[in-house]
Length: 135
Image (cartoon, rainbow, N blue to C red):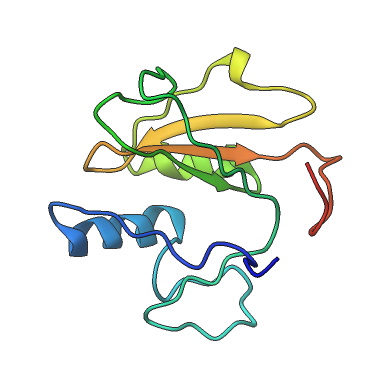
């Protein structure tokens, strides 16, 4: 199969520079961001850590995220509690619901960027599959 993974995500924004800065500041996502300090930053590239990714079209009338938005981001995170503490300290509103958490799938929280795009934060459970395996 010739597709190896996602190579980018491109979306429109009212203020691309400000929105890009928000993602870099609060989530370490975007050009110049690296997860592993051994990686060399590149102004255009975000160097994430490999692992599972869900690719799933939703029904047009789904209520899983706002009907006026065409997408929702989902980021795999480590130490969800620490990230949520930092986001709260920065004034970012956080939504959590006990029914979102599942011992097999992991823990979830939701935030929104300044332009109202939903961002789901996903911490896999400790028994998560290793890189390169199926969910």
